[in-house]
Image (cartoon, rainbow, N blue to C red; front, side, top):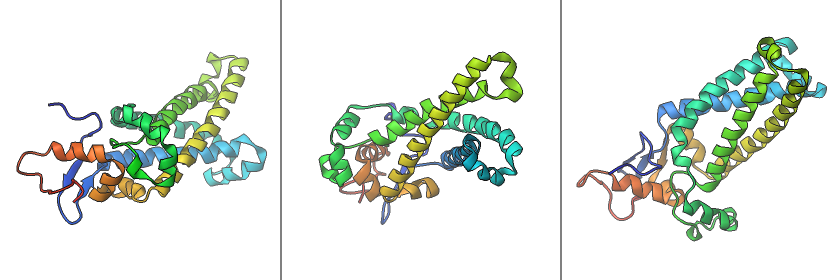
Length: 235
């Protein structure tokens, strides 16, 4: 039998008190933090170049000229890092019927009435929207960034194309900063989420409360006679 769509390599349940669930491998966490740091550096350096009132931020990168040099190269790092993340996580972020139900019950999500929500896989609808939104915006930023990277590509585009690309780049940058803020806020709001991306593990109780379908899939794939759990998978 093939593995469920959202059970990824490295996901596992470890019986104990409490039960521990492997959610992210070391490689996935390194990949995530390289992407996150690249985004932060790009946001700061981009804002520094965006408006004269923010030019003082270039001091963090060694001055204006160095900021202009580093900004696109950090974008290259982001491109390769996020490409790795995309191929690592895209399958688990496919939209499912329970995600539509979760969205329709967004008031219960905000109010914390999780007993009224459907059982979810490894990611909820909000996380999936962030993933696909980030994927789209990063593609837009990279494509428009190449057009305005004058040091290497100015001879391949016209001034008009560069102006349009610059506008698109700025709008996409503002949008991705907003998505990033939502992502960070949600990670802080749902207790235990940040530790999952720092330690790689969550408790069985956390997984049972927030991603019960995923936990059931993990437990059900364990070899017979080696489940190590009784009652609910979180116990």
